[in-house]
Image 1 (tube, rainbow, N blue to C red):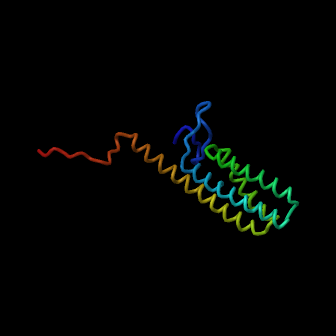
Image 2: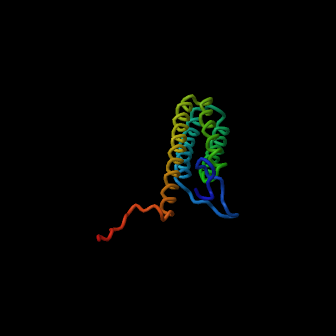
Image 3: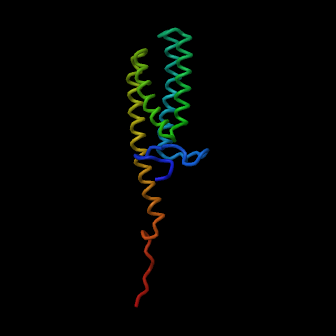
Length: 150
């Protein structure tokens, strides 16, 4: 486990002041899911505007603000706080179903995708850490050398 990860494979933050932790599979998968959700929010905002579900100005400003939050949080997935904020945004996306009921289904589907990315990303980082640990341990030799015959 690198210095930028805490327990459970979640990134905790940079280990040195000003240092950016490397983006691993967990952060990449979660950022992709949140980016896709931001794209869906863009179209949902247009639908809310077109159907006049709420005041048109509120639909555009609220949708743009929420879209910006999703994009910013997608960029913060390498830190633990970003992962937690991403989880909170899943609830927010599902809650948009109060304005447009189809968003309950869409939000639930994306929340399931985000959860799968979280589980799979942790598994990939655990496997990567095991491979790196095995590579660093000279006692483990996967390629035996030929023995001399007497």
